[in-house]
Length: 228
Length: 251
View 1: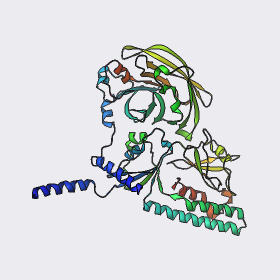
View 2: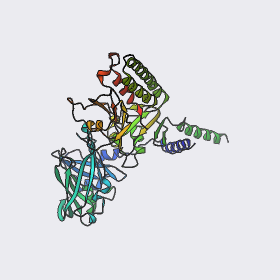
View 3: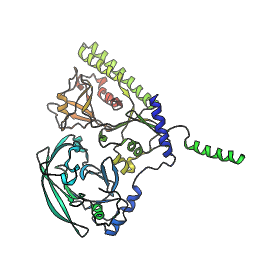
């Protein structure tokens, strides 16, 4: 009996939306928002006009790409590139990719990530460990450890403006013993993440992310819309 | 009055056009049924259940569960059971009691498999939403979508006593083989890995042929019969089992 009730309710709910059959996507927004030139920079006017936030992403030596915020779902920000690749961030940390040569499928243990705290609470010594799952060769469960090594004040320039930031330096240790350094720049006054350099695997180049729409919002250029 | 009933009739027929004959696609996920009045795209189906980040999409499986799909698989099962029965007879005639017993054990297992047609499609909502080529319209019918948290066990099938083993991080197939209790006649050189929604992978775990092959979470491991033990008429037995195993629903 309960089984049929469940069917009835789901069907009833979906029928109400069913006739118009629209799928909730940001596809139309993205077509308007993408700047066709890779490596090009958005002007302040363009940033002000955008409906979906932009993220600059530089993966290794590839030209800098502009990604658009496609979805915010259960605490994850999903940024899409012009060639339909995704970078998925949780509180600024890269936790999943699609469309790359060797995609990061999943990271376990992210609830212990210190980046999930308010910026002021991020302190040296905080550490966590996860396991990473990869697409190529079905490599599953490779340990990755993180430890916050240093915090200090730093200045960065975005959109011709100097931002006072808290620079968090994090030591990463991969399962094969290799290490790397992650950097995160948080706006000192608002706590928003503005920029990061992250390493997700010894076989992935460094990924640099600039949350340019967050910067624009702090400067009053962009309206409050989807925000980090 | 006539105008009113005409209008009412038009409205009624319009709405009943929309709500015609019940859902054309029904998708079961965990204990929930989601119905779609028009043929949905795959993205709609996977997005509907994608409500928590913990869902482990690399191990998701989508099955078509209509009677027609299942009936076709049922015929395949009966065929396989016949082959296994014949193989058992051949062993008994050859005085190979242990190999006959192993064959019988697998036969019993195959009899109890729940079968449905697994569809080999990318299911991760992020992949499926981004590329139209990965986002087909589903055919009408009933489906089962299995996607849960990252599993802590790996299902084992075939010529083994265990039905599952603990999932091990960063392990390869031979690490899993160490935890498997093989039946008489089982291979010690090969293991087959059936990852979710993908083609089978052969792992080489023998003394001389060994090569590293990782096992993804949510995979099924198949322990094959050693090829040397199989009479020539039964040389495709392992392939036959794997072909059916791809359509086994592990509950």
